[in-house]
Structure formats: structure tokens, C-alpha cells
Length: 448
Image (tube, rainbow, N blue to C red; front, side, top):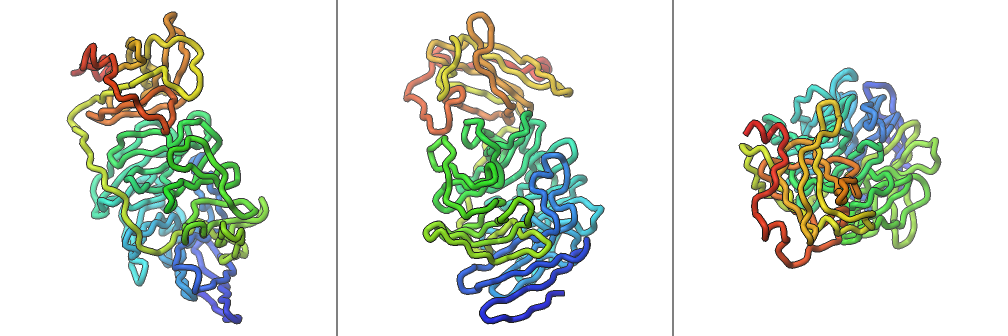
């Protein structure tokens, strides 16, 4: 039940019911300047709980649709609903929800106007943070106590496809305009970094290869920049720049992601003090003004998503051959790096992981005079590369793991070279010597 009391040009919303108990907030809405939006309200919001396998909304949550002076729950009767994602035509929404407190989070879809929620997933653990893909499928995160992974599922149902093949903690964030999926990954050190991957699981890489501070809750805006949370503030990655940049923002602690109303105008979750709840505010960078539109009373207002049509991302045509068991990796110059390599590079060694997590050597190959090497590695397994000097000592080693998909052909510019580097226009020496990669297939190679 919702009680409305009209006061001048403002509408004060006094109550909303959740199966977990009473959830109350007050909101001020200026209908002419705020487009329709969805947001999540929750008595408790623990945005980093998923890193430890716990629920981000331990006391339930309500996903609410707001349009002018109208507001209503998107999934009435559910114990918890959150993680809104609006379709490209602006008519439907994906979300994660639990009907009962003891159930698993599942992916649901509904028409935003007068829709009846329809369950999309049938997960035996929690499935959260769904996103629309331009080909009609859904990408989401499956979480569990021991870790999480990213999966894709047709909206019409079917068997989910796994996209991640390295143990760790993953969380889907956005689908970029070029079709890549943007996600968070927390590796062995626990610091979250932003990564991208294509919808067939190929081309996984760090968005900016700098091993910087903790980054989360990212979203791409109309300029092409990616806005994310880092150290209690918002930051950005601009096209072709490897360095993290500051962004104009209001005082307080933001909780991403932001929802872009127009260039320089964002709807965002913000709290004024470390112990207070999050509310929703409109931030205007040009005027440096903040206007609060959802002021929680004993609850948090987070995860804003505008209800509007937008241009779909590009579709990605996969060339994978699923019957194959390996992929080929070509490095153009292993000596190319944005940070100095302490020693002479003469060879490359590739590792995978055992079932218990121990590194296992797959093989070793020489690095050519121009720094190039060409190897074949097993698909859908954790992989890690290190560079060796003439004495066999490691002079540069990857900190985390990556993977390659069946028949994937991958080329890297250098070792820790960064995304702004372009390759030289020449044939690498390793291909002048041989077009057959050095096989480093481990047990997979012995069974072929």
C-alpha cells in the first residue's frame, strides 16, 4: 500500500511494503525534469557482500518504477527484487528477484507498463545482475559461496552457456556499445578490476591494464567514457587513455552505477555520511548542483536505471569452432611494455592451474629477436604467462589468469603494453620462421 500526500509541487511518498517487513522512504519528485526510472530500495544494502558469497540485500528489497507522480513496485509480492536493466526499446525490464526469503535469486523479465513478471532462469544458486544483449539473449552472474561466474541464456529458455573459465569473483556491469560485456573481477588479491569479454567468451582482457585501485559498478555513458566507483568516489576511463581520471561529482559517497539523463547530468545513488543511507540525486556537472529526488527514511535508494529507448550495441558474430579443444596465441613483441622489464627476455613459459589451484607448467618456447612468439594452449582453462631471461629466471609474470576459447585466434601487442598501443605494420619473425604454433596443451595434447 502506498499513501500519497500532495504538498505544493512535490509529492511525498510515505510507505512501501516488503515481505521482510516495513520499508519506508520519503521522496521528492520534480516530474518535468526527471524522466521515468527504476530504482531499488532496501532496508540494508551491502554492495560488496557478493565478494564473500553473501547477499547484497539481506533484508529484502523492492524494485520501483517511477514516472512523474506515479510509482509502483515492478514485482509486487516478491520478497526481494533488484538489479534493473531496461530493454533497448524501453518497454521491458530484466531484474533479479526472490519470491521467498529462503529461495535463490533468479532472473526475471516483465513489461514495465502493466507487465506480469516471467521467470527467465532456473539457477540452483543465486543468479543476479542480468543485462540484455543485442541478439536477444541475457547475460548475468551466477554467484555461490565459493565464487561466481558469468553465463548467457536465451530469453526463450534453454541451457546456459558459461563465459568465464578462471576461478574467482565476477559481477556483470554493462554491455558496451561495441558489444563487449563489461564486468568486475576480483582475483587473488581481492582488488576488483574492470574487464571485458565478447559474448562468446573470447577476447577477455582488462579494460585498462594498470593494476590500479579497486574499481566497481561501471557503466558506459554517451561520450564512450566508462564511469565507475573507486575509493568512495566516481572516476572515469576515457577512450584511448590508460590512466584513470577524476570526474566532477557532488560531495558524499556515491554508489554506482550512474544513470545518464543527458550529457553532464546523472541520476545517482549518494549518501552524505558514512553511516547514513543512500538516496537518489540528480547531479549536474555544469552547474555543480545536486537535487535529491529519493530521500530514504530507514532505507537505501540505489541502482537507478532510466526507462527510455536507446541504440542497441553491436552484435558480435562468433567464429568459434566448439569441436576444437585449443586456441592460438600470437604475441607481437613480448619486450614491449609500458613499464620497464628488469632483464633480458629470451623465452616464454605458460601455466595452467590444477584442480587444487596449484600452477602447472604447460610448456616453454623461445622468444624471437623482435619479441614475438606463437603458442597453442588448451581452451576453457586458466592460463598465465611469464617471461624468462637466458638463465631461466622470470623477469615479468602475469599476476592473474586468463582463458581462451575453442579455436580462438588471439593476438597481443606486448607484455603489459596497455590498450592504447598499436602494433607495428610488419610480419612478426616467429611467423616468418613457422606458421605452426608451439603446442602447449598439457593433458589435452596427450589425448589428441
